[in-house]
Image (cartoon, rainbow, N blue to C red; front, side, top):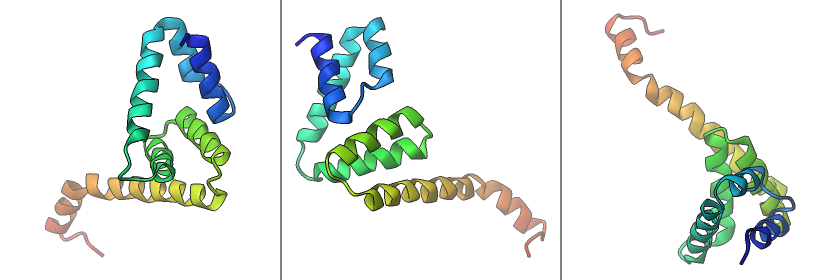
Length: 120
């Protein structure tokens, strides 16, 4: 398979060519093939249905703030028949997880406040 064929397959799956893969192909085609190979391997596993893998991908991309990835995964999810409310819940999970990390990262600060008697 040539890089143009791989990018076309990605476009067919997601509705548009992923900008990141388009740019990466101009810098190192082998990295795009490696990425596609890793995705194929992951989605060949059967313990977790692919629908949920895609929803988890949306959640993870949103939690780390990767806008291009979120958009690419959402387009792919819609094309695969995943419902809008399911995608929205995945985004809300990311919001919840992100909020939780703020509290977790603040443990030492909260300990200082408790030790100083600054609780309400």
